[in-house]
Image (tube, rainbow, N blue to C red; front, top):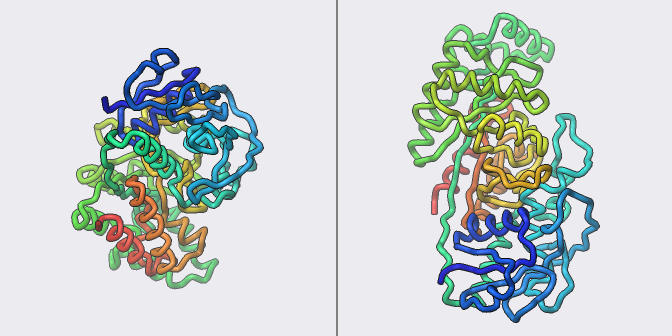
Length: 438
């Protein structure tokens, strides 16, 4: 029987969630959880125990206890190391096959447990990378959850050599955020005049010349890189998703009017070649009615159901933001990542379901964590194009090592080869080459 039997003295929502994540999502094998010790002892199949006591000589993973709790609390972690990586939720039991509760550690990271605790938000209300346990342990750029899942696989294979695990494949997904489709074109007279005023104030005569040439039709708008993107899609056989900011104008939402005819034609054109999702506006987390309105407007335009989203400015407030998405029938979210640092915010390089710690339930919302974003490398880390390419190479290799999914976030203006993005088209082309070449 190619199924793993797991004994747990208590089957909670958290226990079910983490074992489903590890065995079904990541290792792709069947499993069954039982609380019947007699049944477990009599079963003749690969099996393991998770709990506070080893009742048999089967594989035993000592539990810390967090998977049998409800609510959240602060932990005083004692850190150690296993397999060359730092660990937490240490257990002290000689019968345990591991010196830490690997399942509790996975649960802590993927649920973003620490983001439910009090913390100091940045100016945009976000939980930042430097606050995270992963940053503290220097594992933010490692898909540690995938690494730990493979460790569980190795332990099981050592005890049961004939147990077959399916082989996974590395996958790549290119995503784009369209905050503003054009830099100068299609703007209102008020915004055009305002743009000239700001350029004059900065004495940026180069931008004045560029803006004028674009407005006179003598030069292509630098943000208009959509033909190039679709060319990449064809050349590299990419699976792509576009997230359009489709909201009213605000201080942080500087998109075009959603009723602009050329903008609407662009969105419909892109939808013919790629999946289109919503880029919920800056204030949509605090004002849930905005999400409903923006989603309705985009669906009315495309005449399809929109099921994908990524928050503008990556403004993710747990659990409110995700609860808002669920209430509006959005099913796939791509916000999980940091603006200020590359890597794996939830420690994982695979899609997984959101577990709502406030309600203690696994939801239907699927989370797709991204590993790298253009603005992170350029505007937060101040990397040169060559340094950015090397950082991307390292991240892709980490994901390849665990046969995970590598998701990138790029913006149309970052491909412009204008101003601060001079030389960065090469960075993106290198990313595509590395992510699509075996």
